[in-house]
Length: 542
Image 1 (cartoon, one colour):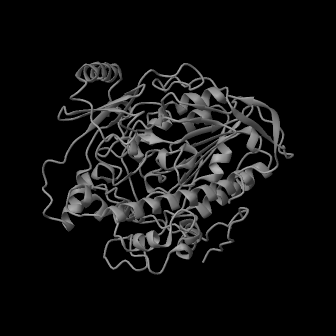
Image 2: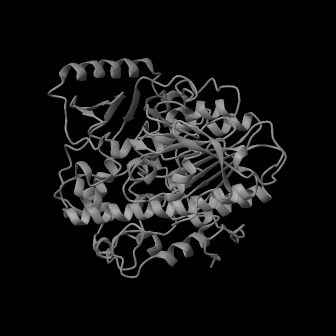
Image 3: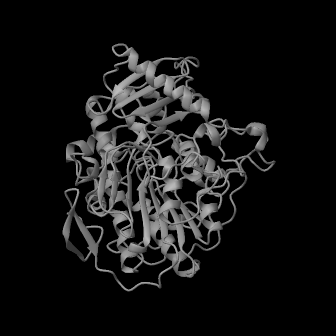
């Protein structure tokens, strides 16, 4: 069993809502600041129902479960979008995707928006971001606007990340684009598995780049759960038996095959689907391990209790449900139900909140917890410390036609027409309505049917009408995205390496209007490895 995220915990004589209240022995740390630090740990592509802290029968996240006992666990948090760019746009602006406009068709967050990082920076914060996701590159989609220091797994830290990834690859793995035994000719590289560098990058910045007179806002993006998934053997063994491991190594779940399954051009057996789900669980076990090391080091430095810590995700992942893999096609819970845990012992008592919430409200919540003035631009973000919303809304505004074109180049029998669709969803109490661009409605009782297997729309038309009316009124009340506010420099620019990474991840970049990817800038000597994380293998750069 993994050791708990926080060491030296002592039981305090009190019970709150049936849960024990814990308090760590406080190490000597830096002098107190006027405002708390903020740390956002984002596990990219992580659905809540596969975490043991959310009841998954496989113990994927033992350390996070222990950490969550000291924080607020939102049991029904949803994403306002179902993939990286729109959901991050909402987290960082507090606006709905329909207002901020970042989508498949416009892979960019316009510069006129005031981001969370900019708001905190304007109020005296030092800001840092680390990303293993090329959608959050320095220039690619502008999602990290306002972070003073931005580091990535494929630039400053690529030697460490590349070597760490190679060390955990299994020689008989043929399942992904970067697997040693894969015989296909699809592109792949190893810069997404950046967990070994993520904590080192943060602590190196805290030691050498951060102004200790200022509180910090840090954002860390972990990509281990995103495809291509290559967890190490030490993380497969706790969650998979040997037979399932061997089947998973032989099952081709490259991006093209996953998407082709959704189009009906590829088949997976039930056992193969279960095996790929177990690989996903192994990736969560790996994330849990690396995040444990991160939090343990923050505690040793004496800053953990002075830091608002958020653990969340931008969206989930379909793993064969509704004949879908990845994060496209629809607004099902596999894509929208995400973890959300907030720990800040100075203000928040341990609790589990069953009422649905949205990650779009993180902007206002963090501003509230940090005791900063509200941002007048974050007009559709509401603090979770106040009255919770009676209904939640999610949407996908455009269709990834470039992704379909890529899959059709391998499987030309897939028809070009009939797949383009967009979706909107409303969640009110236990009911959820999904309406697509063709006016097809689906209704589900999430409490009794969390995987949405029984469509109730035909049997309960009155409830469909009520939710549809609320949905239409909500979007009619929101400001629409205004392209006229774009600056001349508002357009994505990805390097050639980033474009290659995006293609493997399934985010195909279309160079319309001549906006070609620039050459990758030369990287000088990589930074020193930074402080080693406890229990972690000491991996030296090549």
